[in-house]
Length: 67
Image 1 (cartoon, one colour):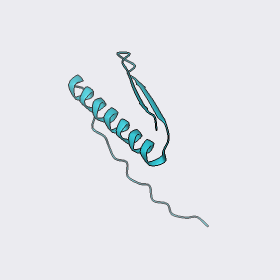
Image 2 (cartoon, one colour):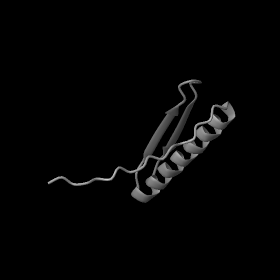
Image 3 (cartoon, rainbow, N blue to C red):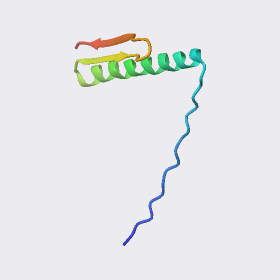
Image 4 (tube, rainbow, N blue to C red):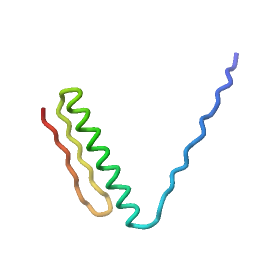
C-alpha cells in the first residue's frame, strides 16, 4: 500500500543584498531570539545562556538569564 503524501510548498524568503537591510534583519532576529529565551527562562524556571557571534565582524552578543 502506498500513501499519497503531498509535498508542502516551500516559502521563498526574500534576501536583500543591501548591508543596511541585512543588519536590520540580523538585529530583528537577535532580539526575537533573546525575547524567546527570556520567555523560556520565566516559563520553565531555568537558566538560559545564548551567545551569538557574527562571523564576518567577530561581534559577540551574549544573553544570560538567571532565575
